[in-house]
Amino acid sequence: MTLKLYIDRMSQPSRAVLIFCKVNGINFQEVKIDISKGQHLSSEFQEVNPMKQVPAMVHAGFKLFESHAILRYLTYAFPRVADHWYPTALYRRTEVDSLLDWHHSNLRRGAVGYFRNCVLGPAVGLPLNLQAAAEDEKVLLASLAKIESFWLRKNGRFLLGNDQPSIADLSLVCEIMQLEVLDEKDRERLLGPYKSVLKWIDDTKNATEPHFHEVHGILFKFKEKLLKQRSLRESSTGESSRKPDLQAKM
Amino acid sequence: MTLKLYIDRMSQPSRAVLIFCKVNGINFQEVKIDISKGQHLSSEFQEVNPMKQVPAMVHAGFKLFESHAILRYLTYAFPRVADHWYPTALYRRTEVDSLLDWHHSNLRRGAVGYFRNCVLGPAVGLPLNLQAAAEDEKVLLASLAKIESFWLRKNGRFLLGNDQPSIADLSLVCEIMQLEVLDEKDRERLLGPYKSVLKWIDDTKNATEPHFHEVHGILFKFKEKLLKQRSLRESSTGESSRKPDLQAKM
Image (spheres, helix red, strand yellow):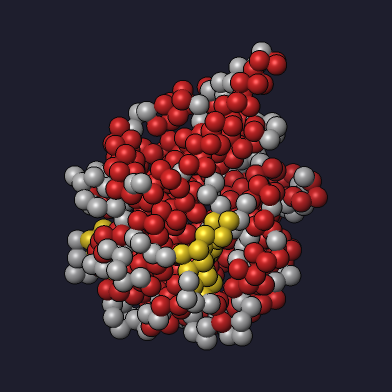
């Protein structure tokens, strides 16, 4: 009956699921799937998730993937999880559903694309695709603006005006945390204008500590590695680590 | 208490919501939002959905957008809706959740991009973005392959091996229906290899007639208009209506 979570902590939805379990005292076994080593492509893992993606889960023989579905399932399967994570009241639950669905084609799409084009690509020596990166940045900024002006419009520390976090807060904040690896100027340029978003990120962190910080440790280490790489590149070529201003270039 | 649905029948998730209500005998008022005329950008509609997208819904003062959230809500709010649409049994419901989430970043992403690049763009005179179109086609074909090999792997007429449709069948089939407007050769090239997908589309149509056909009427008319446009273009320029083989060109 042990819950098995197949996780790469570098993946933002993996971190959301992991933090959720730790905060809610759900016992689980963490099975590390290192994407950078291609472990998600192994035949053993494809037996768990034929989509070859993390996070995935097995509980009492039941196999599941897609982080939002896993988070919903955990609220059903572990009744001691507090109601605010996925409220049972009809309108409140439906608002969380709407927000989770919106996330896929907006914040997630923009942030994943931006991270892939502007961080992962350059880190492994791929040329910057300026057009794709500008498009991703546009989606990312429009999504942050909508969180600021719409999803955080009501009084309350969390999305939808709630005074305690839902699974949507956790999912969206873990997504935005991927931007931690940017250099400070870029991160400030993207997130700086959104004061309510920054406060909400802090509130979500605070509501889920010490687990939030512990689970994100891998990301902070990755950032250090990137900074060292950039610094080495600069000292050997004289090249600036500052990425181009994508909007200005398009 | 009347349910108001803000719909453009050219939008595939709008059609899914509309068919769902008709099949389940839910009374509603259809408010037409014509995207081609920019009606989704009006201040009146932004009062309903500040994301400026269809479908949207108002029920007893409760405003909602995102088609999957609307479909889930309708199964909660109208208890006479048969259980198979969104099963209450834990594992069966969770599998539908997983499939609905998967849809966003896979079939929907591929189909929407392909339709925009290869149908809408050329119809309004935009140049074909070969790289984007090839990327969309790749996502679309990979998604169709996963429906064939995974989501339809169990015996049963519908996704997940069910013998009656869920909201996921309706959502995904309405998405694929957008490809109806392609010329026959292109449609055959994309869908032809997936025999189980084709059978499942027919089964979903049959389970929701006569509403399925009636709601898709607008799409068939749009196809006629496109065929006329192509024919006119060909006769005036001698240009072939056949789109380039994107994979071969990349």
